[in-house]
Image (cartoon, rainbow, N blue to C red; front, side, top):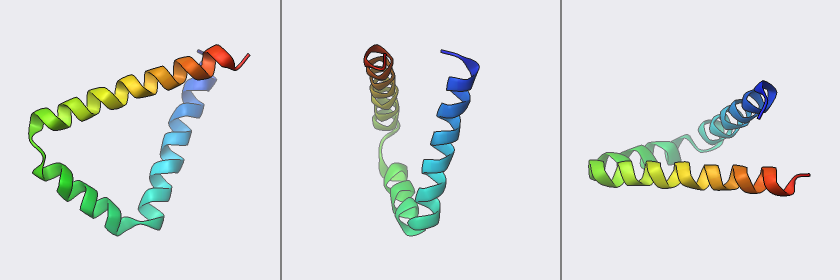
Length: 66
């Protein structure tokens, strides 16, 4: 993975997050409220599942990209 791959990944995250805030700001508020109501351990588990999913998707993309 090169520096340009990392920069591309960060840029894509920023674009997607920006779209969510621009197109559905009230949805973001509802999601934040839902997160506040979740127990800390549930949020931690959700974060870990998200990380694992991202790593698996990166592995699949790299494995079958070429």
